[in-house]
Image (cartoon, rainbow, N blue to C red; front, side):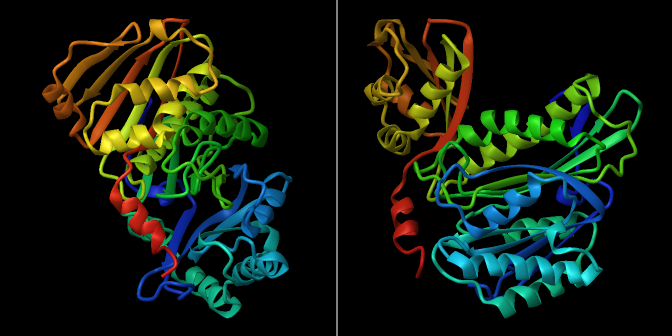
Length: 412
């Protein structure tokens, strides 16, 4: 963490002018909150990245139109349980009615409201339940950590942990800016966005084009570098709302203040990406791969993602089985050309560090020591390609029996 920013409490409500709420609307789940609201007192500029899947959920189509326009936004309404994907014209009508129900509460326009959904694909959302939920959310909105945390919990599906973070940073003009965020994601997660909903709030005054540039670059090295199961979702959404209430000088050039804001937003996104990978469906271990010595950044990213995305590598991590040939194999089919006889590989965890491959050949390592290193809640596979100076890191999780159980019973 840089010296000019620090973690604070507050989640999405940490920046000035933002409030949040949760509500049990009965969209699919019973007896738990399944809708969330993020609301800004003043209009926000937006930036966003969305799924690369050609089958896009209705909320993604709704949000793309707004985020990629000059429209300003006041709120995000999200539901869990039903994804509103593969729902055709009725699905788009649900988005419009949801946005209209919320905007009517404060006398605004429906195009000021972003919508997001996560859950089962192919089911229709009950109109009365979600519109009544919008009205309840608006009445219940509040500032503070408790409201932010409740909203973060409401968007969970198979997640086992809520995922939120907030930071405070100082700019060169002495102004203090805050960034808050919450995400959900546990399964159907694969590079080029993943099954995630992610919402970032900030009170920084920043140019829309620069905000989008920063977000795109940061997503490439954070959420696009995680994988749980190789499936890219229909609903991936990661958006930033900026209301400018910090009162700082507008960040409209790539100067020192832009770099500070960029690094703080990068820290937030990387932290949440790692948490999503660690909370993969059925996971017992965060599986990280760090590749160094690659010819290009693109090569380094492809190599690292290939390792953490391999079902055989993930199974080896779950079984604490030092089957190093699987890691070499995954590097080999990554699409990157390299000399296998130059590759070195290590295991690293809280239990220590151990070299298992040197020059493409297995070392005379101790199997018991390797097992001890792999039997940790976080395990890193370090790879040196000895081909260049570029490096990259990717995050995944082990592949356990519970993954199949969770997904075999997901609708029931």
